[in-house]
Image (cartoon, rainbow, N blue to C red; front, side):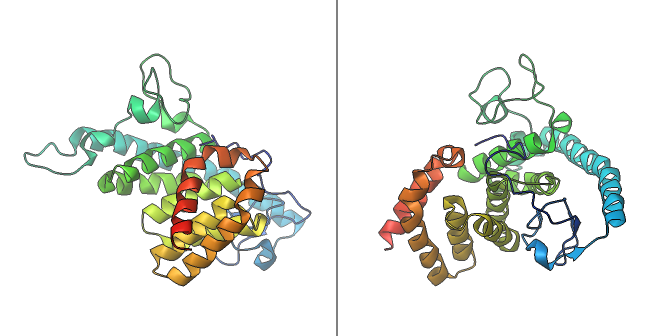
Length: 269
């Protein structure tokens, strides 16, 4: 998985459109945004703001951002406290007993082969999520949630979900990779509305994106729409070879998930 940078070949284009608000969810849109970073609604459906209003919006976002960081920091402190107290009662079966604490296997720091490089850590000290950039924090929380989801640790997944969702909502110009991360978190936590919005926004930016197609298929199955899921499977198989030939870094980072989706699609063909 790549550490999101809000820049690069997959970053959304900064067109001529101005800043505004999403007509669907009311989120503030960054200048040049083509889709709402929160719900995926196309920019054309948003309420455009005047130039003066754009300046006001920028100031508003700047004033809100510290509160968002403080909120995530608070959640980190709660996670550390809960990690020390979950399961302390005799006979407790909550799987978050130790999972709420940083671990070398997931967070890196001094060994353990972390999926995402530790930031701001030294020696054997656990990373401080509260001091990371929004992109770094979102990426690390994505890795943690996906690791727990694969292991069937549903309590831990649900515990970290609010922090992970908040971190992704703070990304002002998410890349396709970051949208995919957000959508996958929403999917494994049972939020098909957010997951579908992220999948649709990916496909609006790149209609043959393997990440967008496999996420769309997963969301359709989550809602019991198997016919739509199979349609996305077929689109995935058709786009597979041309898309892999582009050698996008996103595909290299998520190759296991892509191969798994392709294998499942071929079984159902």
